[in-house]
Image (cartoon, rainbow, N blue to C red; front, side):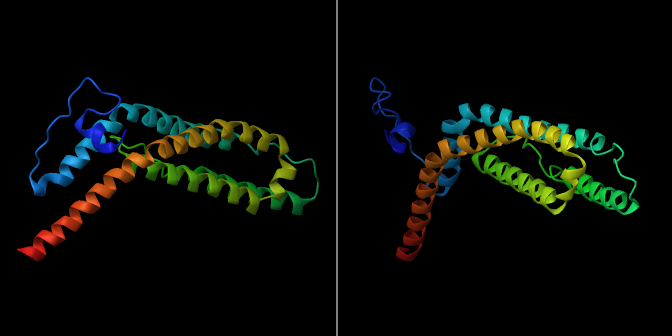
Length: 195
């Protein structure tokens, strides 16, 4: 069933329901399309908000846990190794705790807000990965702590993947609305040229 059928009724899913007639002033078409997009996607937004809250909560847990990791004394008497480990730890903790700071769950979900949040999550995960790589010798000093960190990150990555699947499941609908809006803009140009 096409988007127009879902917007106006009728079609396969609603064979018993007659298509609804919609009259919209030319200037109000963008507002109408935005409202219809929200109406169609609206029932699915609680799922996306829940996923975003779970991801944000996971980053909060990560930030809390990082402070308690990497604090055991090293099994070495070499001051240079202790100094290197301390510097790497400070660098890692500082950068890793900043990774999720910019993740804010939007008050009201929209496809674009969900997509923007997901992009920031991927950037935060990439930043964590880069931070670990930049301080790769820290893993040798604190293997068990990194294993714990991996356990904390697993649910975050699962939720981020689920959010990505949610976005992909709704992308076609959003693209259809964007195409209709583009057609409206083209029609507006033609109206302007004719008048």
